[in-house]
Image (cartoon, rainbow, N blue to C red; front, side):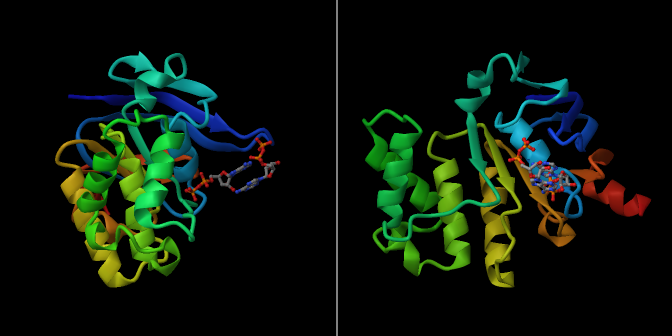
Length: 224
Ligand code: ADP
Ligand code: ADP
């Protein structure tokens, strides 16, 4: 089933720069890797998909609804980990997630259980009460995933999550996203092919804001 559809999507910044041009994609469940070099337009496209920026041309639909007209239809089902995600170092992981749950407006009832469940999912159960200032880069990224899972999203968007991680943390992160994709659509952007070639069911390759390839990873390798 195609849940997220892009038709002729473009985004032009106010200075006139076309960061994304004429992207068409239909995405179902599983992991989709958005691959492209720095400056390709990945972050811009992900902000459009996360309803933080409005496409300047074309349209994006989620379960058939235009997200520019009905952003809440998507927002309620969306988890987003931005590239520049930061944590409050003085808080524990549990306190920080409880704070974010309140900011996101999740109903107070059941929040404590939901926070613990999210920390479990990302393997931070044992570190729940430690100050975030003591966390490694990989652990911080897992906190980032945990906050994106608070509302049990059907669509999870993660922007360059492996930047700054060591090889072991990268592998661990890859496995986590593979697990999470069993029940949801995960869109992962990266400029590192090895981050996604093994786990992505589909690849979308962006350069200069344009979609150059969309299909199975094997098809891209065969084409190269
Ligand atoms: P705007 O919506 O006006 O572009 P921003 O706050 O996004 O406002 O950016 C402010 C200015 O900085 C803009 O004029 C933009 O051209 C420039 N800018 C910001 N980020 C980048 C970038 N990554 N590459 C090029 N220019 C950028
Ligand atoms: P990626 O995530 O693939 O590195 P981005 O979406 O961040 O690419 O950027 C795509 C293009 O848009 C780049 O050329 C970048 O310099 C430009 N850009 C990013 N932000 C702005 C901005 N605020 N204003 C103008 N241009 C920008």
